[in-house]
Image (cartoon, rainbow, N blue to C red; front, side):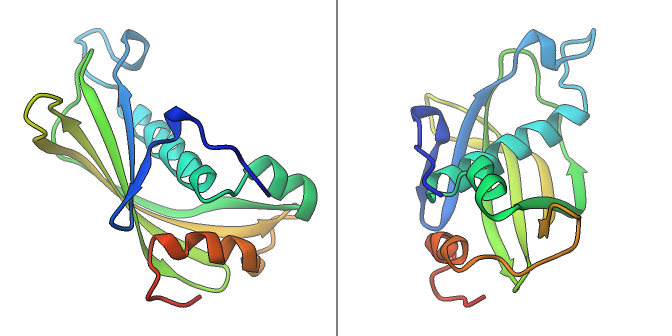
Length: 157
């Protein structure tokens, strides 16, 4: 399940995945404010790149094992708006690991490249389940669990 990381995959620092992006015109409404559903897209991209950095390719996982990760539940708290041309970062941290599911806390922040300061814009708590192609939950494969140890080495599945 080797997935090559790219420069756009972000980085892992202190058990947290850091993924940067910029707000484009297509992301905003007529007032230049990010449309609410785009925060979900930003969070999904970050989770995909988080997997990629651990060597887990979603396409390979599906083709080889017939498995995928599906969002089981999600809560989102919109704190402040992101605007056209903002530099954002998605900070993702694994908070719970089960046999067939994981909970990931994601913060979308406005990043100030000059000072390094960050302002929380959106908080998401996402529970993902490992599922077979028929939609039934299944145990997360050992190599995937091992890849996620970088996010919570002290926790066991």
